Length: 100
Image 1 (cartoon, helix red, strand yellow):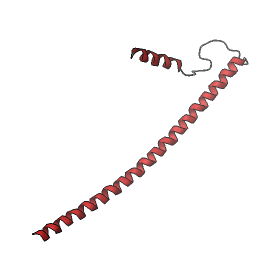
Image 2 (image 1 turned 45 degrees about the vertical axis):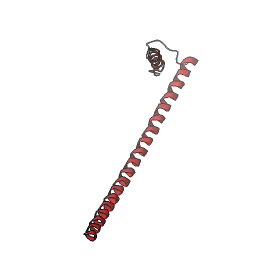
Image 3 (image 1 turned 90 degrees about the horizontal axis):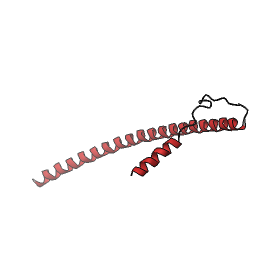
Image 4 (image 1 turned 120 degrees about the horizontal axis):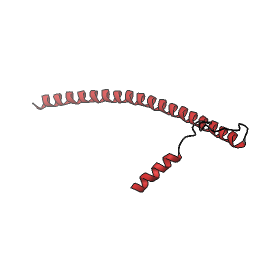
């Protein structure tokens, strides 16, 4: 169990975000291949993050719409059950009246 916890903690450290492009106070040669690649990777990661957020929002809206539809159908079901219950009570009254 401890091994799994340590592994999970190390995985979280490895997943540390891209951060800022120039956040370590070191000088950068803005035309160097490494920095340009880093900028492209950072831009791609930001775009993927935005797309994931948009997808999540769309899914959340779809779930909300499904919940509204489910609530409407559930209310109709409850009303129908109440009608059936009332009809059953009336049938029981008629049966008891005929029995007596």
